[in-house]
Amino acid sequence: MKYKRILLKLSGESLMGEDNYGIDPNRLQKYAEEIKKVKDLGVEIAIVIGGGNIYRGVQAEKTGIDRVQGDYMGMLATLINAMALQSALEQNGMYTRLMSGIKVESVCEPFIRRRAIRHLEKGRIVIFGAGIGNPYFTTDSTASLRAIEIEAEVVLKGTRVDGVYTADPEKDKTATKYNSLSYQEAYEKNLNIMDMTAFTLCQENNLPIIVFDMNKDGNLMKLAQGEEIGTLITSL
Image (cartoon, rainbow, N blue to C red):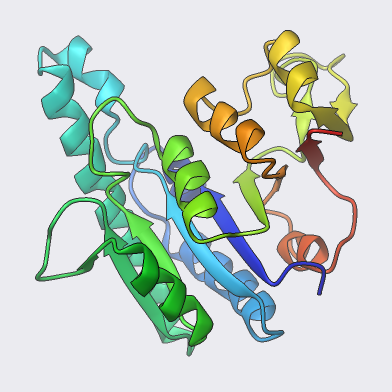
């Protein structure tokens, strides 16, 4: 396997499947099966999942809710998704630990860096919920920060498309795909890969990002084995 330790970033919207909101149990089961294939080959896996299928903090202003309050609501939404994913993984025979950026001790552990690394070394899948525990930070920022903290070798960002394009391929049929990019190129082209905080963290710590289609069977395994799929963003 090319990577010993990875951080997988999933969006909350990816759990909706074909629905307009909520969690599709079939999609959840499919993700668990894909993750298990990689785990069984000895790769240490950490996961960050968003909460957009339930609630987004940035929606707060539209509904009259204070932005900070809305962000905390979004953090709780990520915990709901993390608990659902944890259940699916364990039903497929994997050992997991859910660690939270905010204290919810009845259902998960608080995030402690050394403990998270120890869980990974013991073969457990670690799921990071509730962001970093502070408002104004996205789950992309959480993924970048946690990946750096646990010394992951790469951030694998699973999306609905098979990489980064010159434009939104779902809206623009003439959009072309990038096989690789430098951080600087991605910034200059204003490509919407991650928010600027997350992207800068990866750039400053020379942490590669691979954007790929998580919904295609076998893609996660191919990446773990070193196949060139999706779009690789590095310092080049």
